[in-house]
Length: 431
View (cartoon, rainbow, N blue to C red):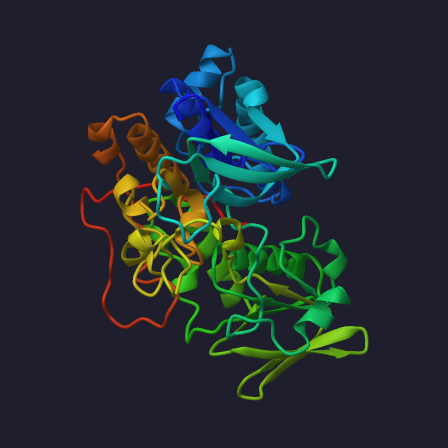
């Protein structure tokens, strides 16, 4: 099967980095991207500024490939998503040439001639990636290995506190009253009441933008609905955070709360979103009601598409939908994004040989994924596929502390800050 390519699903930061590493190792990659351009998912939150600097957003093998093509990537400053796409991801895809197929959506991964239950000759059979192109034509593409870096952007979480849409949430979303993306322009919400559900960086970013709107437009109300008992964990580590832009996001939001621009509602577990005329009312499981509100932003994280790999053998954690070998390292009930270790081929191994889930999708529902962590995954996995097992086992990252002592739950007094010398990566600001 060495004559076959390694198929990479997704032309985002990790998928393109995988292709660059494969090419550098003399292995032919084929990248399938369902969007019309590389970095299509990033482009959807192009108005959001990342809290990682340029030198933390570029994969080393990708930088070398771009340099050979005469492309200089910025080395300083904090770009917005649109600049990350324009100045890095699109030039990288161009350098890879026709190895990147746009408007090609992978819909299933299987083994040639063997369904999931067949053992005999399984490891010797090539993978088949079933894909649909932009014209609706179906393709069966053979591969020696498959790297699924398709991400989680297409499957946002609901406002409902139990992980399913709240009563009435679907109808409210269809009426335009519930959204799961930070709008590029919030001016149309001036003078209106807006509710934000969620506690991650997406929610914090939205709360801050709406607070700035409230300052400009008197009468604008912002209600931040948190399931947890306090907003402290969501606001980050302040001066203890080794990433200054990430610290600034939480610090500015804290000041907006102190100035009365944001109402924080804690212990609020959304059970219903009721339509009231042309507005909505958000109802908690304890009967509390917020509203009427002009719009609800449900920014509760993302989840992976597990159906894509239903035809092959995978091992996923039952609570996170993450690769099982990663779960203990990334559990948001224990970890914040400053305490997550770098992971490589040992943790990413699946029961199906030469199949790997990389990037944000490997973390499943855990919100702790960091940009360079994904690059380290890619480096390790590609070294393994190339037979360089020493490089595959090596850990090349060091993680800066966040000053945050926990992730998703309600936390007690223990702090899980990374010890000196712990593996590291730097995060991007989730949109």
